[in-house]
Amino acid sequence: MEYIAIRETQKQHELTDMRQHEGESFGANMPKIITPEFVRDEVAAGRAIIPNNINHPESEPMIIGRNFLVKINANIGNSALGSSIDEEVSKMTWATRWGADTIMDLSTGNHIHETREWLIRNSPVPIGTVPIYQALEKVDGVAEDLTWEIFRDTLIEQAEQGVDYFTIHAGVLLRYVPLTAKRLTGIVSRGGSIMAQWCLAHHKESFLYTHFEDICEIMKQYDVAFSLGDGLRPGCLQDANDEAQFGELRTLGELTKVAWEHDVQVMIEGPGHVAMNRIKENMDLQLDLCADAPFYTLGPLTTDIAPGYDHITSAIGAAMIGWFGTAMLCYVTPKEHLGLPNKKDVKDGIITYKIAAHAADLAKGHPGAQARDNALSKARFEFRWDDQFNLALDPDTAREYHDETLPKDAHKSAHFCSMCGPKFCSMKITQNVREYAAGLDKDAANKKVTPQSGDLSDDDHLIKKVDTELVGQVGEASAEEVRQGMAEMMEKYNKEGRQLYKEV
Image: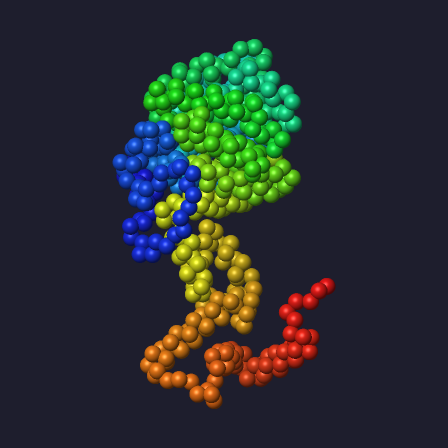
């Protein structure tokens, strides 16, 4: 608990400059300093979870809850068409390098057990899985042949390995399946579609629902947390917030209370594809139906027309729902709906979602969230380029972009970039104005002299100062060309009636 409290507080008590705008928390309770006692209280109340299997000692304790920093999850895993164990382990280490708070192994291809073992043994963050995927592999992909016994053995196998949280689609009930018949995209959750097929084939409720208390007892033994899956989440904007989605959410709320009775931690999975104006309804309903259990959402994507850019379409919704109260955001990569993500896609998805999560923390007014923004902004104003890079979410890309036009080490102390150059940098000009104003104040305080009619005006002083700096930067010859050009433009400006804008 103490370790988590230290991580969440981020040494705020040592900050000397805590300037930060107030946020809108929508009812979240975020103390200025996170204490071990607060962590315990939140977990005990079911408002937060600490996913940490007793068999995963490599994992560093972390917390997921509305009243803490918004976390992000990165999905990895092989498919029947590609990726090796080495590639998936490489993706995992890459994902944690860029800030993934948890990893989900969604492998559906060969060597699922071995892949998961390598991931767990090398992961410093919690690992989640969807056990039904491996159970389906054991029956050669025939959903109708799944049984409770096969699933139970799979749960125990994965819990013994050290999986920290399981996605269980226990809310897909037989009566909800027909509600998806008129949807534009039907059931888009893999686990949800598997259980829907099983329910229809056997015409009874799934074994995930009927054996839910048995599942709780298994998970309790290993301190594995539930991620109650939204098997009926919407796969397009048209299907959002429908009867099937919210019916399942009500069932997940009921199952949450059952899990709590067995002392098992729970978070709730959410959509999906939802237009911006319908996102808050999802958050409010989840808090109400699930008794403030942490919400864990995939996006949501706010438009369906941008394949190849769904990390952006979803980050818009993710930032919003994170602000409204979601505890963890599941990243979306540029490959969403198109293919299996590679390392570059993983990084792009993580950085995009780190932005969304941080934007949500700022909007909520999370104590200390703005400290990094203030530090980077100060470094930017003072032209401390290396500090800017190091404070960025992605220092490598920031440095790479700067080096494209100003690659030399000397440029890392230049008071301009290639966007504005040395003469049009607004921050440099602002610094000059501040220095000049400070000088005037100092002179006025020291001399207490009234300016004579022959003295230079304030504007003339500034012009003279800028001209002197110009000569120092480009030389007298080039400075003269600049003066000549400015004089010509001023003459043209006066002839045209001193109009800044002209109708086209």
